Length: 577
Image: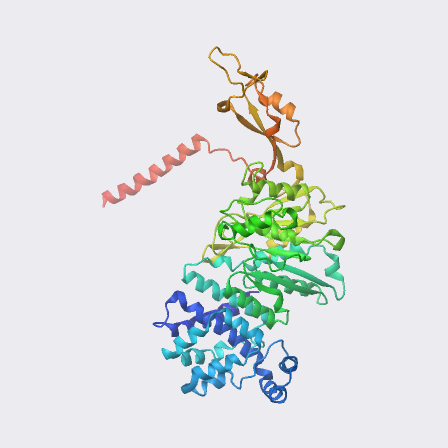
């Protein structure tokens, strides 16, 4: 793993260094718009190099045939090909016609690759670089041995890492939100471990095909790690990846990555998942995602509210979160993609910040979403991750694990909370906000704790109903000037200024709670039953709170005296001189 990481960093450094050739023509925050597409194109170029001449020969034979596409794919050995006579190396042989020849080269790619290049909006940059006399210089840099991206040199998985590392660096240089495209690999590994945990069908079956979906797939890192991990357990199992991504650049990289690996790249869709679901009505065996959190969804508001009116005929029947944060919309999208239990059911691993645990009062959208999840027994576990493990944020993050196949298992009606906040190792060098890593040992430990499903200092197990409460409205009578209750139709009228609410745990009797907690302090109070609402919240940190006694005053005084003594000694030394 360490060797792989060094190799990835080295290649990323070299590609990053090529950006220096753009200085003067482009601003540093624009470098990625040139280097990223060129890196993708160079990867295609290196992959096709071994069969290049065979493809050119086959093209001469079949270029007028209607089925030439199939025959050329067969000749290249991949689902893509290039019929131009040029390669990067051959382009460099004719510097005087570099723009014309480079365009000829790009036009020679199969349609699926041309679609990817178009997403990068790269055409204008070719013109700019040619006019500024740097196109040849930049392309030449990509032909050096240090920029060799042949599969014999760089595996598909390593190439995925390199793409993400380059994106992270360019985003950082632009002060952009790198984390929206990049989830640390150890976090994905942990999610995948849990997602596939004890799934005998895929772990031991022969020639089993399963589907996995990411509604905010970025460059496809989660899908790639899931596929790699599954193949390490059972090479005969096929994992078919589906994903949707809104950012054109990262979508292009994800689709290129899928194409290169021989996966069906048509299953990677572009567009806004919240307002334009490209997988409407489809369901999947596994769903995993790290959707953006703390981002408003006002641009998608009309579409989302229209779909919400369909109830559970759409994705958002459980409720709508506040317009300032759309992460729970992705959570409901994931739930809507679960297979029916008669089809084998589904499991979800999705990352959220702390907000979905407790935001929103009883009757609000977020509370109703939690209510739906818990009352339908969909939540298996929530795992608190260490702080400072993401590149763009140091705040608390959590993995939610959901399943609709808990029935008949020890998890039925239960939720496991795992506090893995302290299970990390410090990084030698910070990457943005990422100062900590979850080591392999801790990944295994968290996975084991989840699998054991036992209580410990960092694992708590609760009934679904433990998170629920009834919010009751407590009324007091309105008094007129003589101090008597004002009556309306023979009943005391409520004084709105004295109105109060109480949250009564679902497991408690409302009547007994009211007698114990309210009547002793307000004997004339009553409950307005019509206003009662059921709410759910998961106050995670409260369950793991540890009381720490304050330092005794005598110890504090002793410390102060010791500091005074040291200070006096230092001052004496200065003045004695």
